[in-house]
Length: 400
Image (cartoon, rainbow, N blue to C red; front, side, top):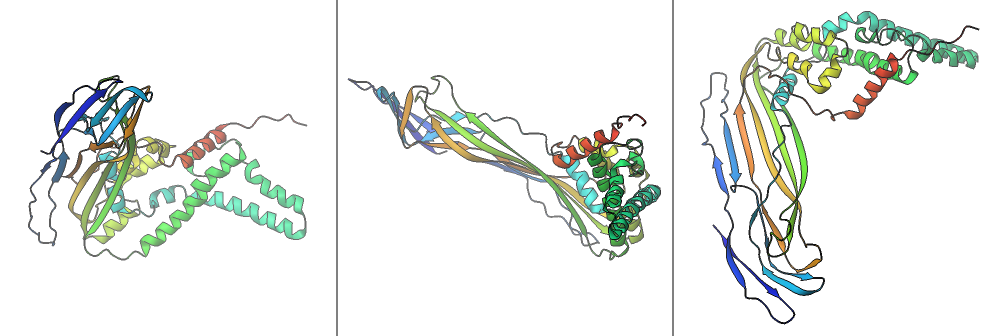
């Protein structure tokens, strides 16, 4: 292990103390990794993956100061002259449990399925969808007709009915919330997102699925999430550091979780049926529950249920989950105690560990965990506000 020398002495107005010297041992990295095993290729031409890990550690995280520097008390005496410093342990918070490995795996299964349209829900809500679109188109045509005649007041009144009349259904799950006239903007937001945009997506998805070419060769689906946390740690307190300095380090820590699922298609009609949403009654039942999508914002139950038929018509070849934990020093400085100033050229050095782990998993979805509720916060907040506004009954007016 490399060793440096730490020296320190105190200067007073009339004399200087003796140098106090001690060796400082810098820990060397301890790298632990699994042995790489080469597997045999199977009859389909697939080489199975193996679990693997690599961990670089120093027995902990450490910090010390290199260089020559002086600590002055209000620019006078006493002073301390230092060459390097002792090494101290740097205590960081534990790694976060986010992102969830289960949620990342379920997201990879969902990508493998690549569902374009839920045909069962499309047929179930067809009446509400057709009525809603027809009503809005008729209002728009009436407005255009009045405008061409020069009757601008009647044209504006036709458009005004977009929010003055009862919203026709939107989709079945919102019928109870929209049975009374709510606030205009909220009802229009719900109608745009859950009626018109949904209808457009269903049509595009159905066209995409019917025109999709049969898959050839292995299919890989990948999903990943990352979480970054920035911590500022100040080492030492009071006079516990003999050289009167406190290393302050800002560290950006990142945890990345990714998953990959691999399969070989062999029954295309079953895969196509799965992608059109007609082979998973559990998911259809969950999607039919009013406001189930709000629950999915917290715990992705729908994504979990949708993964049970993700590999229908395919031969499962393998899946793995990888976790990367790494840290990066953003800023490092040496702070002087109260009443002191530091001069010279001190350089704060930091040792941080890192790790990579790959584990094998099966083709079944895992029980979901709580997801990050801040993801897509703006759209979620707008939808919740629209739901609350649409649920409020319009004040009763006295008859004239």
